[in-house]
Length: 130
Image (cartoon, rainbow, N blue to C red; front, side):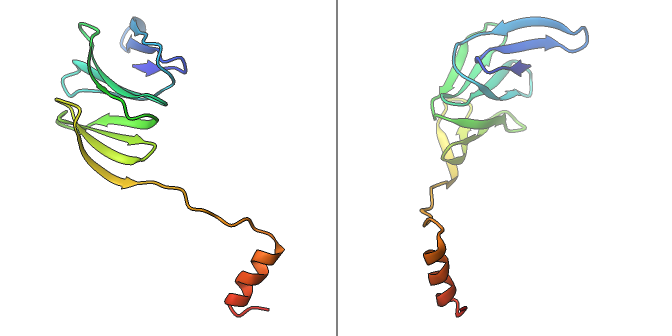
C-alpha cells in the first residue's frame, strides 16, 4: 500500500504490479500505513486528522482516532494495539475500541530568549567569562 498528499491510499499487488484498489477519503497527507497481522485491515495515519482503521474487503472504516497531526502509525506485532506519533508525543491505543492506553510523553515548547550581544554577555558573566 502507498499513500499520497491528497489522502488517497493505493493498494497494489506487488507480484503483478497491478493496482487493486484506491481508497479515497479526502482527508489529508498520508503519513503512516500498516497492515494487521492477518492483512485484513489497514491503519492509515493522516498529517492533520489522526488515523483510521479500514477493513480491506468491505472498504468500511472500522475505527477512527481523531488525535490531530500524526507523524507515524503502526500496529503492534499481535495487532491488539496501535502505536502512533501524534503532535503531542507518542501514544498507544486499543485496536478494539480506540481507547488511549498510554501517552509516553508530552512534547512542549520551550521559550528561548533571542540571542543578541547583551544576552550572550550576560550569560558569559554568569559563567565567569569576560
